[in-house]
Length: 258
Image (tube, rainbow, N blue to C red; front, side, top):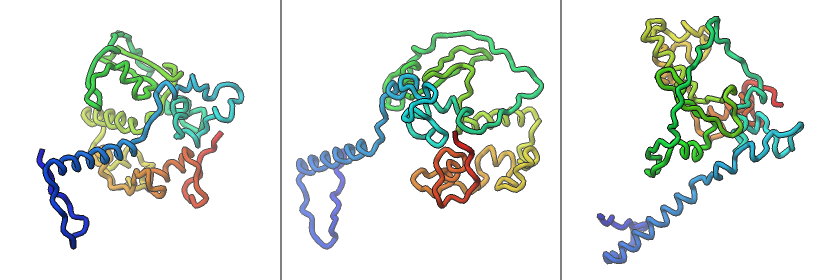
């Protein structure tokens, strides 16, 4: 390995050059301290089994114990989300979008045991689909193949009929459906998005095209900086009631929390 040139913290003074053995030791010590500092700064999450809302008895009983109660404003307090993300309609006002006149498609089942499927995880180690779900605090997983359900699992007390918060996955589903409709000629990607969503005419999307919106290149002034309380993500969380609004908050009123 190439030995880097030592940096002089005081340009006006002379540094004595270390011999190769001492330089190697100093470099190793510096790298060790750097790695230790990185590990110290990395968030340490509790083991998944310690966050199971069923075992923790979150929202059990009527009324639940104060320290087991989950409210809209405490959804993001870990591990409350493991219960709340499939109970959001019980915590705040929501709107159920009508599916239209068509009847829902009947999904046929063609189950396969793919829980033992092995692959490389983000750390370069080998894991299985079943172990990966456990390690990533998975609430549910549904795998479709050629129109059939081949694998379906629910955890943390979630049932198959319960809707789960999608968060940014909503963009993926919307983008996929929009792309299919563009391919079929139903939607014009070069048209203004207000052609299909006139409710956006007075918003920052008023002059954006469908394609620009799908590409997320509209230039909307929004920052998702969780270290800056004044960033757009905090304005969203306060408006949605997911975080208590500070006294200085002047945005839209938060929904009622119960």
